[in-house]
Image (cartoon, rainbow, N blue to C red; front, side, top):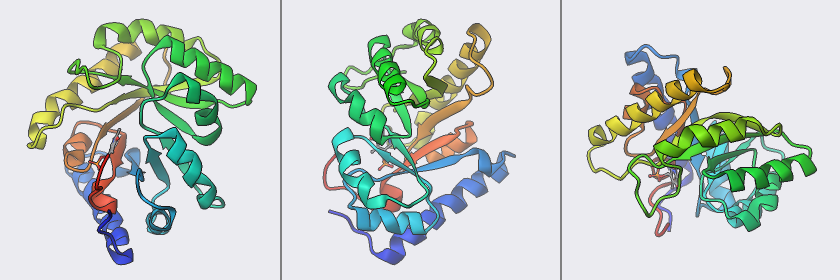
Length: 237
Ligand SMILES: *Cc1c(COP(=O)(O)O)cnc(C)c1O
């Protein structure tokens, strides 16, 4: 159930973009270095189009099946489609065909399947590695200890363009309490740069959501994933 009318979706998009600009200016960052991914899970195509009309250029879906069903309704739009949910190995072929970015690589098995699918489909896929900073059992992602070994493997795959790190920190009512996780992901990015052959393209941090993205902008985020603040509350998911 969505509580959005046409004007509120475009107003919400404008509010989020303005907020990104305001915070970026305050911490002396270029707001163009922050990419807004509007998370359209559970949102029907008619409402997604309103966000695109309001200036959104990137969408995020957490389920392959839903992304495949929705994307044909958005043909002809300038659009970067991000997979932000866990990817099962039996859905890799479909995911590679449907999505432009995969943000949720967390194992070398999965990466190899994506590599093979991209080779067959003649695609170079921008990918992020999902890190499970708090080692939450309910969340996917590689633990910090496994990050460097996994990256070494990914960097050897010619059809993956490894762009950075993604995390979903533990939910905290108070966004200030999420700040240490954002900082940690940024440190890990620097660590990877120093210790692996990752090049200048390895610079993305995907880490803020509706209730904490301003803090993420302060902490150097380059990709924020915002659903509720644009489309309204979801009934499930
Ligand atoms: C749903 C979702 C979001 C967006 O969450 P909101 O709180 O609605 O902004 C961001 N990232 C991931 C991985 C999600 O599944």
